[in-house]
Image 1 (cartoon, helix red, strand yellow):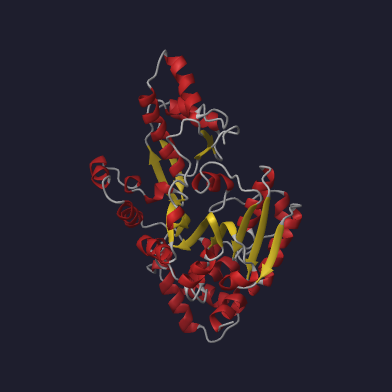
Image 2 (cartoon, helix red, strand yellow; image 1 turned 45 degrees about the vertical axis):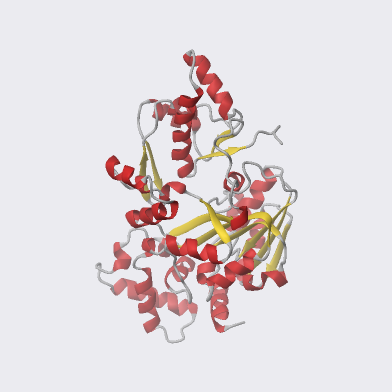
Length: 416
């Protein structure tokens, strides 16, 4: 292996990332994006996963957050899967294996090595590939993404997370400063040096002025990953799209679409309307500039010639809307008071104004009723309700809640 790969391995042997204790599996399941089953079902498989077994690769699986989450969710859903974990670090792998064992989960194959060698070590092909927080740490992110694309099955998709540039303002000057003081120190001494330097800095330093940066407070592993990593290449949204394109991939969806809509950040509706006609890429880039706080780009991607029709069809009345991590009755009651939806997303306060029927619609998103059935119930209650008016309001509700990761669609059990 090359020196850069060896340095990365050395880091994660000393500080497995993220810091996790397998004993905690008895009391909680860490969830997030990418690779939550609700997201996969909605964004990549049209509202239903019908591949059995579903073949999954966690490339650079670390201490196993995504691995444990999806493996548990697939078992809970009764979906058969064959899951492969690949990582450079034996220390990280040991923690991931212990977490899987603690939950009594099976069907996970653990492989040690670089994802650059995935075609040799774990050739697949895979219906779904997770690569979260890894590719931006490669000497050549293009080579890493190409390696993963080479083992992606026809009709498969990827869940990716890479660092974003603006939300990490202050990180890279600190990284450069620490390299000046680092003279071949061990990882442990590098962490001590970073703490010493931070304690002596003026409050005008951009690292302290960026309220989005808090990872370093969680543990020494998080501090090392944020400030001392030997390789770290962030992406603007435009750079992200170009990077996917070079690998023959297209962006299917952001995991949190609301973050990439300019209107999310524009309180003046006149300004928001002026952005409505912009092409998708321009809207997303503008939203990133307006926010200034997006630290990570979390996206679902597929091959260019297979990216159309991947997202569950909002215009199919048979689709079943379902909420994720939401108290449905409580939300419906709040919306019934005419209040806007307020949510904190990625440390950003987001307000979404909802249509008049929002409470009635949300109250019926129970995971069993289809869009058509919700319309039928509301039409009966109101003594008639045109489909076009219902659908207009349903789409507004769905767009708002799906945009913040709270509402998805799946196909009914008896379809197909």
